[in-house]
Length: 323
Image (cartoon, rainbow, N blue to C red; front, side):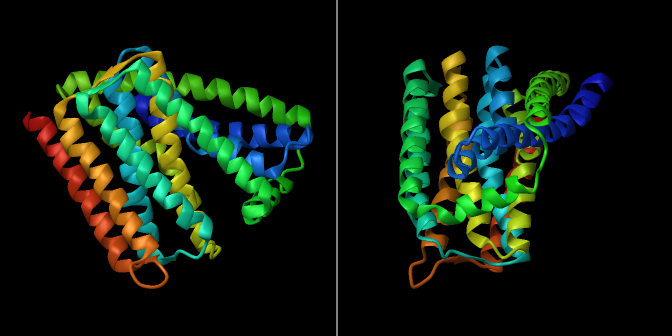
């Protein structure tokens, strides 16, 4: 039990740190070989912010812990909206100015409905996983095509600024890329092992561990990015970061895990957790699109999101031990 707790306390910070090094190294190598900032931003950095969720869910699926794989992915989606955007909006209201965000919000809503529909039979089959990964590839291709038409110039400038700040040589970037990937894999395995051990010790399902400890932990990069974006006045980036992460989690994280191992889910997961994810996504859509005029997330709505998340987490933890 002590060793399992230490593995989580050590594994999670190493996981997040190595993800940052992996992203920085990958972006530096890509820039050296002339890959456009747009592709770096959408593919490499987009993957990098979801790398903790992806790697954790891959190893959870390999070990047959489908509860951790799904709980991590959809629990992160819930945390991204209710915890991260809630806290961010409470600090500084988020105005929705970009047409790109208004275009991506309906896509996120559709993605969320697809995820819920797939779980109606309490199973993520290989066919479901192929569908998710196929849609993910199409979405990435469409996004890059839209960007090449000039719709994402602002994103390209932001990524260029971030990458240009790093003058490391290609050799250094390559070392960080490989070292970051190795540490991602090692820390993920340690984290999953510790989570399973703790769940077994306390007699709770690994799904609860995935929805709480792991989901919150792997969402920390999104929290840091959103708070930094709001401090700079880049409200669209704060919101776009969460929208992109939720799409990655639903399509890539669940899709890849499902390709490795078909996953069974408990009815409670569908009716409690997936319903919560769908409800929060609908609320986000309504607030940000706006029924009248420009949409925004104000402090009242952010506070409501945060209270919902705290209540939801409290319910998960208390009922886990009762059951």
